[in-house]
Amino acid sequence: MRSAWRRAIAIACAAAPAALAQAQDIHFHDRVDVDSVVVDARAVDGAGRPILGLGAADFRLKVDGRSVPVQTATWVAEDKAPDPALTDAAVQAGVSAPPRGRLIVFFFQKDLDPSRAMGLLQMLRRAREMLPGLEEEDRVAVVSFDSHLELWADFTTDRERIRHVLDRSILFERVPALPEASEPSLAGHLDTDAGRRAATPETALLLLGEALKEVPGSKSLVLFGFGMGQWSPGVGVFLDADYGPARRALVEARVTVFALDITNADEHTLEVGLQQVADDTGGFYARTHLFPGQAMDRLQRALAGHYVLTFAKPDLPRGEHEIDLSLAGHKGHVLARPTYEG
Image (cartoon, rainbow, N blue to C red; front, side):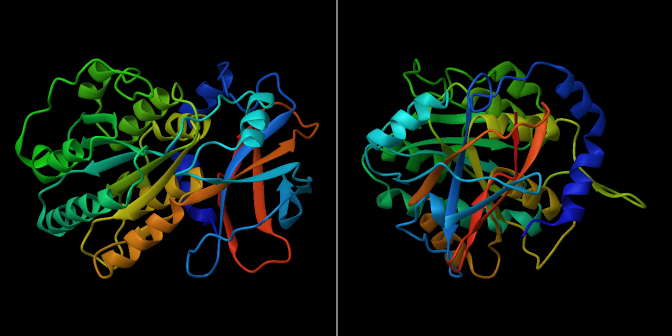
């Protein structure tokens, strides 16, 4: 369940830039000049395992508190070819057909503070151990952020290349000159100059979200990080002004963020930012300092597949609307973005 106070923190800190952004004509593929809204959703049981075999009637949807029927619910096994029915539904809803295979971005937040360094090293190793389990057509890109955003590998099926990046490049090498991009590509759409100027992880996420809008299909971003935002006495944690635009860009790009906290602590102030971005994009937050294997197992189960839901846009004023998705007649819960623009 989303935490209302975490959402209040993010909204309060981003109120001014959010108002400015809403005044602009922000293009959302799943809301402009179409009759349906597309939502990527993961239905999971208490152990985080995907619940299979669900149809539209198995989901309960409310928009701004009003019940709205789900039109279609299509399971996408993300290591398989796109379902023809899903492709047709996506095209009718104004969403580009997805490529074959999964698109996964590994995002590492770098810091050599003792409370974070061991977690970073452990998650670099755990990410490397994921590679043999990926399917042949799954593509992985790797980025990092310390004082700015760096792109280490564009979407690729070259496991040896990704293994080298995780083993050595991120910690010991300079960012390489990447070969000419071929689609699907992160490098071909990422503003690398802006990346070098990015001073916060919120800005880095904004740049990634903007770039990933140009890549068809749903994407997963695994954020191995220690937090976002800043702590201020008497105020608490506030997120950078770029968080609001970053959230909207990630949602528009159909990016689900899975935030794995590398901090060696049971809890800490900056975890709020990681929890927020996971909640806002339909992913989850997990700590890794005690049971990293469990967190990685949960991640791999989540990456196995998802449902693509469509529903008719209710007759509501133009703007942001709240989505509340749950299961009807089944035990478990639904991970999905909490809003859409319409």
